[in-house]
Length: 367
Ligand SMILES: O=C(O)CCC(=O)C(=O)O
Ligand SMILES: [Fe+2]
Image 1 (tube, helix red, strand yellow):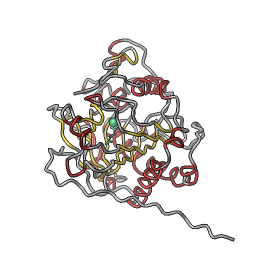
Image 2: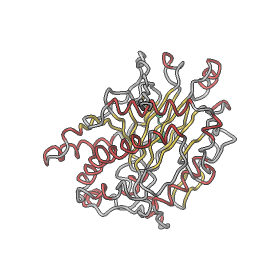
Image 3: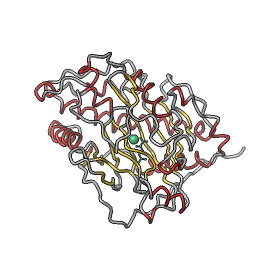
């Protein structure tokens, strides 16, 4: 009888850039301090300050090994090595807002008319609400992928959500309870690949704005971005409006706040604007592989401002829907509408800018 040999996948990160870029100075949340009243008090203050002033922060001290993270990068790499016809079997109805599965490159025009070279593969929660067809590679490794996603919830999202609740003087489990793994929500794990451009294409792009993706905000609560040595992500500073590069930090996650958290906090916490730029010269010759997790509250949640003593004291009691007196959408409704806007195939650069996605909310690119 043949002995089953576990398949080993390895992913080697490329070296970091040597260029002296204009890096963002971001605060760090050390989750190893989470769990005691003093630790929680300190971290919740650091966190709320971080998300109000920067919108981006690093997380360290979580109990998920770099080896497990690298295995996810390796699975992502293997996924993108599958033939295009195979990957295309898993493309959902993108034009109608479905996004779990494979999104091929070339659906967007970049500045200068260059088609984008970004592929996306989204994996939903394994909680029974999102039946999916998976390629064998994903099927064969499903227990590991599922455990990884569940651990992200237990070891990273729950503590971060608790800290946000505490900072808003809400019961500690307030946000955690809106993000339970077993509930129906649009969370997903993403393997993302930005294939390199030829030197001629790079030149064309750089003679315009040099962007792989334009300034935008994410839909959910927070986005976890695993350490990414290929510099490309840029963050727009809340205060100065300047664009800065996000530096990869060893053993860290980069986290940003998103639209739903902004709605739920009456815009006290802003949804962070970010974009992806062509990497610096010494990293332009490689493909950039990303590993991300998009946390989103449960679909049936109405996106009204929560009843928090802090928000009341500070005067943040209405979000854009409430201020305009329009219907407040549920998370499920908001996701379908914004994903549809995001995914509609563009025939022109910056097409669909400023289009109303829902009464009270427009889809915009941010320069
Ligand atoms: O690739 C990155 O660094 C960020 C990607 C991103 O902003 C997104 O997929 O929403
Ligand atoms: Fe994003």
